[in-house]
Amino acid sequence: MFYTYKIVRILIATLLYFGISQTGFSQKQANIWYFGNGGGLDFNNQCNPLVLTDGAIQGYEGCATISDKNTGQILFYTNSAQIWNRAHQIMPNGNLIPNGNTITQVTIIQKPGSDSLYYVITSEIQGFSGQGYRFHMVDMSLNGGMGGILYKDSLLYSSPVTEKMIAVPHANGTDAWMIGHAYNSNQFLAFHISAAGINRSPVISSIGKIHFDPSSADAVGEIKATPNATKIAVVTLVSPHIELFDFDNNSGIISNPILIPERGAYNSNGNASGLYGLSFSADNSKLYASQWLAPSAGISAKIIQYDISSNDSALIQQSRVNVFTSTTKNLYSLKLAPNRKIYVGQNQSNGYLGVINAPDSSGLLCNYVDNGLYLNGKNSGWGLNNLMEYTDLCEVMSQSEKTKEINSYTLSPNPFNTETLFTTTYPLHNAKLTIFNTLGQIVFVKEKIAEQSFQIQSVGLPTGIHFAQITQENQILFSLRLLVQN
Image (cartoon, rainbow, N blue to C red; front, side, top):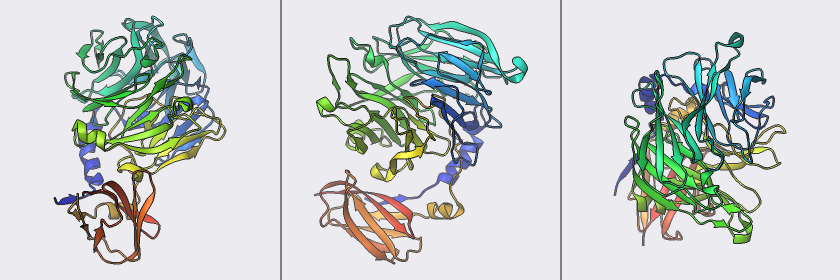
């Protein structure tokens, strides 16, 4: 087989600019995050995150922050229990649902056709609190532009529902969907949000697993959509599975399930080790999930990557790679940021976020760093910013990186038995090839490469998937995926 790889990020960004980015939604609405115990991130400085420590939020799970779509400056934020304005004060009448034993998931959606009205949508606590999905309205024209609560506590869908929810852009480029999941049911609920308001009669897709367990913990976890709004994924905690579906963002219908089981544990003390966080990569090709720690069952905490580009269930499951494993800490929410990186919530005292630096890349080449971003004395908790995924992401490449990324290479054949030929138009001098197995261990190194075409031998490489990098002057030029056959 003959594969030609060409990175076309600049072209894709241009197409997206003239397509989805002209909708009523803007990536700048997600430029500021507040989460955890007052921590936060500001992506307005050319997408290089500035750590914030002035947040009033105290919330270990669901939280959302919305910024002005034109300027990227903060408007308000919430943990579903309270709403704070940009001065970090609770808005008048800004107490929402009671916390109970958990702070549930929450999302914010600007009302289509309005410059000042925003829906805050909240969920009930683990499928048993009786609150259902509810919506509240923030009007930013109130209180001298600081915002206020126009109304609150309107029932969207009665109990029981899970905590899982996400906002997704509508195909018409103006409206939106809020997608949730019923509890003790296999029903997805897609609520159409337009200039006329929220349609309280959802599009119902009865598909996939029933989300239920006696402890109600299967109501916990994340649901996420691809940035291009064509697929969604959802997790279950106690009977850990990832469910991947097609999403029609015109009709709201969810279809074509792919069920991906994972190993988990749940004991009589109510300690679950299952799946919690989810995120797709910016190029829509990779799906990441976080799994909790269960030492007594011999289960480590993990960040797992699947390549979903084939849309084939067997190939997706075969692509599974543990990009990080821990026996000491738990890993929670995964969130795609404006800079194309994915940040990982950690409810730990070390005060860091994990960072997947290159989520579009296969396997360990995604470059996960566990202590990736120090929060200056704050902690993230479980949640980060449950806001709509956008496609008009920041351009963060330097000019030299752009030059490298538009150079194509070929790798032929791949899969291969004895050898494969790598060829590039990019000038190599003193380059280095490093091949890793799926555990991240180096299995082969070739140095001082000056040829633009050279063979990669299978000698010493076990049958299966391998990942490789070609570096030069301490910079990654190419990331390769190799498949060695018998």
